[in-house]
Length: 145
Image (cartoon, rainbow, N blue to C red; front, side):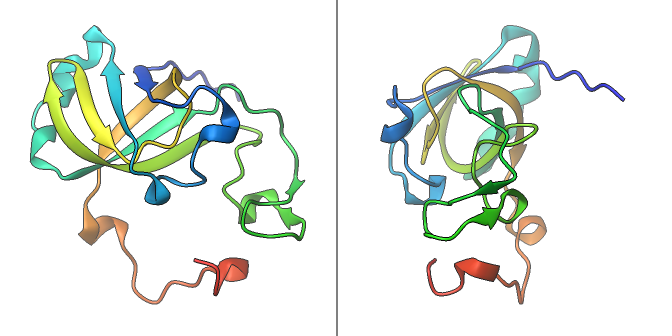
């Protein structure tokens, strides 16, 4: 089976180098712009009512994949799928960011943690009732986050 993904836009951020990016959006106060391609702009209707959105994007400068990695918060090698490491077979990233406003096909966001020019694959509204689970476990991250 072959899958084809087409970007719907691009994420603009202040980060030009990988080493500058925060390790997760939750640790970032940086502001950026999500520029949606004009042919998808109508899909932004009603998004302004949400305080946060989920960005799905392509780690376009990722080297990879590697099935075992040393994650940012650990010194041990871990299985790739037990981490959020960017070097993946399908380098898809996800960030929850605060939506500050919309101007046409551009969204102003806070909490951006990606390189400038990152290809945007999708946008979804963050809905706490849908996106939160009680009694979750964080595996090897216990006591670190």
